Length: 287
Ligand code: PAF
Image (cartoon, rainbow, N blue to C red; front, top):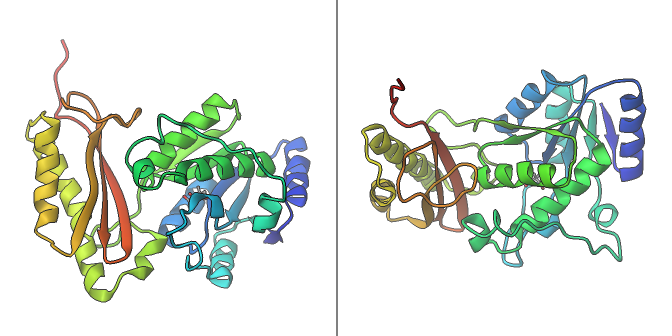
């Protein structure tokens, strides 16, 4: 496996392979790789000839009070996982190479970024959109894979790829969960033993929302209350938001009459967790 740090060298590597008709797959990450990333890498492997994983803790997507400095960076372990999974290139640019002096272009998607994560983390999505655009411009993949766990991010990436005519197929891979249902995340390592046990309540609350929808409840507020009811039984957790939304626009649904995504974000101590569940409505028969 090659480790490339310079954006120019990365583009040269990809361009050379593209000229030979090779399909390049890309999994962008911030490192601290876990089994969720491993699944993304494996899914990418099935869709491409050559595979690039980027490891870059992107400063522009962290707010001033967030965990940029203490974000986990186990680089040797990350490289070992990539090597084992048959990754061809680990692209590890420096912040200076990505954002040199004089850098000024930011990519913003005001509508998608307005709600939910965007409301709580105001500059987060323009940081994500900017770095994803830059990384795709450097790596030049035909296919890029993202995890469903960051649902709003995946909607944003699809939109920016479409708006900017990036000629990349975006694949969103289902969330990978621990045995008890907790969505895998690089931030789970911050949880104390006690909080780790409590953390699964977020998933349980999404499941409770899905269950009432399956039983025929269509009122968005009632679905949201069913989710909140579960979380309120766990006083150590505070709710940032629980939402019942249209999966393509992320607008809240008053009336759940088509496919729906349930979004949730909570805090336990200083750790923030997000999760989501896509729910299909009870089967209707069409004549
Ligand atoms: O999902 C992530 O890990 C990051 O937001 C991404 C897409 C790698 C951009 O920094």
